[in-house]
Image 1 (tube, rainbow, N blue to C red):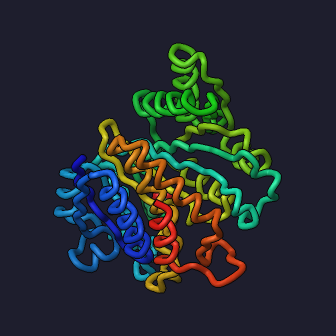
Image 2 (cartoon, protein in one colour; image 1 turned 135 degrees about the horizontal axis):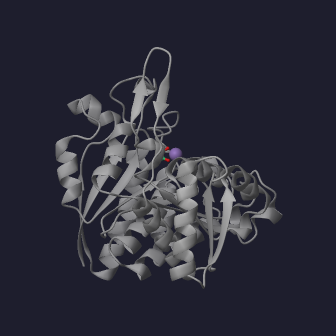
Length: 351
Ligand code: IPM
Ligand code: MN
């Protein structure tokens, strides 16, 4: 198959980790007779420095004509001040909004060979396989904001349509997994959560009676995620809760460097990125962990290109590299840490 892939490497370690994912995709293309064309564009701090905007028009044009987007990371210390008017994060938020990428899939799986990396006890990690679906284009992130000298507000709003499409996606994916859906909200306090809960209840009752549904408050979910993580299958939640919960969940495998993501809309166009950030402290040193980005590339093969077998091949190669002890610095290596390149090489060799 032919595919046009937009490459938005961004800032910090973004270019280093996406380079390894591109190498893996190129190997897959060669092996299976696919034709993947990569086209790069600017986003984030580097885009602000070069053009003045975090998401320049040529980048938006490119992604709109692409089949999929491979994204690295955004942000540099220069833009760390959150009161700046123009910020790298705006590039990513605008991409999600402009492309209607409303569902953010964040799988959290533990690797047997890495149980020592997690801050949690090994016995808690047995059988952990969670898929968090974070609503990505609504809620408090995108509501009206006001500010005076003495007060500030951020509006959180959700519509039935915005909730319903997340519920249907979550339930459909749960059906193909262990058949359990946990909907996380704060319905004891928030009106948006009460809407979320009632829409979820109705759709599950009418359309997915075979999928087990459980509601959980966000505070309790944050606790249970650490206490009994293997009880979770598919989790659906709103934008901000999902942002927080998935950073917490990354400590189950033990490193943000192991957690991929896919941001999807109603078509096949998707944005694929590691959930870690630009890690400016280690940028340019060639030591960042590329596994999360390579696993994101596997999700790209699966969700945007429909290449399930190839996606599994990439995931299996990463699994084997990890099982064989190839560890970057974040994975507590006992001997010398693998560089970004060496970890990429290890995956390529196992493809
Ligand atoms: C994420 C990030 C973003 C978010 C930031 C960079 C805007 O934390 O993708 O989780 O909050 O969504
Ligand atoms: Mn986040």
